[in-house]
Image 1 (cartoon, rainbow, N blue to C red):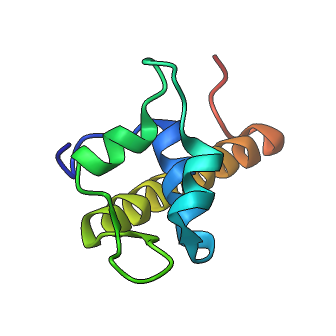
Image 2 (cartoon, rainbow, N blue to C red):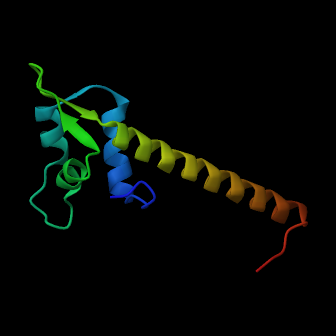
Image 3 (cartoon, one colour):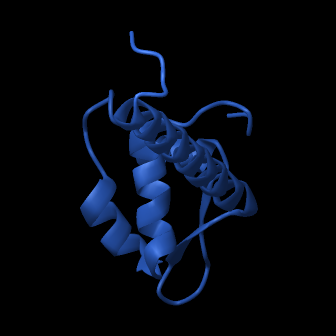
Length: 100
């Protein structure tokens, strides 16, 4: 997955969940493993080098530099989209924006 590719919402949710606090491999598997071939976020993240399993005692699952970068990119895009949406709503409320 190239950094310029947009990530799926489920991937961003997964990366955000991992970034929130330290997670063990067991905790990650309990929360995210699935047998559904259409929902392979764990496998996709490993293949795309977005997460790694540490060799420490707890087998911590961490974001790679690439995973951190993708998450930051998605957060930046969401913030920019939210700002543009708020600006447009303000224009419409004031009657200065185009309708339709």
